[in-house]
Amino acid sequence: MDAAIMNGANKKCGAVAGVRTIKNPVSAARMVMDNSDHVLLSQRGAEQFAAEHGLTMVDTSYFYTQYRWDQLQKAIAKDTIELDHSDTTGYYQNDDIPDNKFGTVGCVALDKFGNLAAATSTGGITNKKYNRIGDSPLIGCGTYADNKTCAISCTGKGEDFIRIVAAYDIAALMKYKSLSLKASTDYVILTKLKQIKGRGGCIAIDKAGHIAMPFTTEGMFRGYIDTQGKLKVLIYKL
Ligand code: ASP
Image (cartoon, rainbow, N blue to C red; front, side):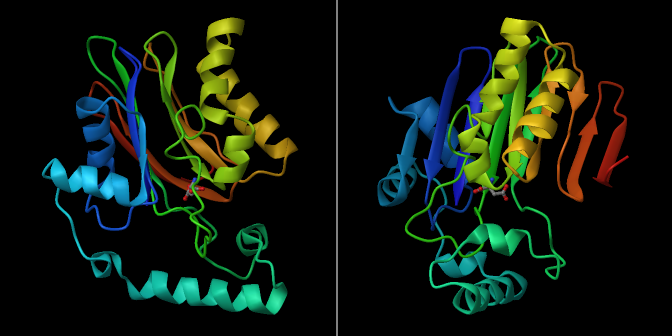
């Protein structure tokens, strides 16, 4: 699992990557932000840090579900059938896999003082290998927040989001070109990500409370709640 968190008020951030036994990786990310000199810890070192700081540790079996296990077996089987060198792009673009969505959990928030924050937590992509790490724990790629512009959390094939430095690019377009949140997110997700045949989307909120949630996939589970308490949950395009 990978996770990251960023505080847009002071640019403090923390992240963990490639962890297997931390019950709530995003809490570990916050612990890194609040109680270490570092931004990104990985694998066993990150787990050791989490355990030393009193976070709940679990056996890997805690994360087992039959559904995800079956999904993994299917992906493994497809790899051996399709190619010796596995290519997860093929897996994601295969239309006969009904669960053609991504599983990252992200959150962006604006408080009444104008502070923005973003957090992202993920198991990554199915059948990842060689300690592959995605965009979620990489500040500026899958997660970013800056009080001057916006807070962003991305989901999709992490490699594509890393290539276009998606989250920071959205904030940079707002900062340097004075684009709106909608124009910035549309450009990065619907134009730049599409140009490299990337798949996924983002959730974003700006300092004025505008919300944008564009995506290139068929659906993206998403929701928001506003200052009046109005709650909206969506899956497919509007
Ligand atoms: N972005 C994540 C990754 O590539 C996957 C996801 O969004 O589900 O690790």
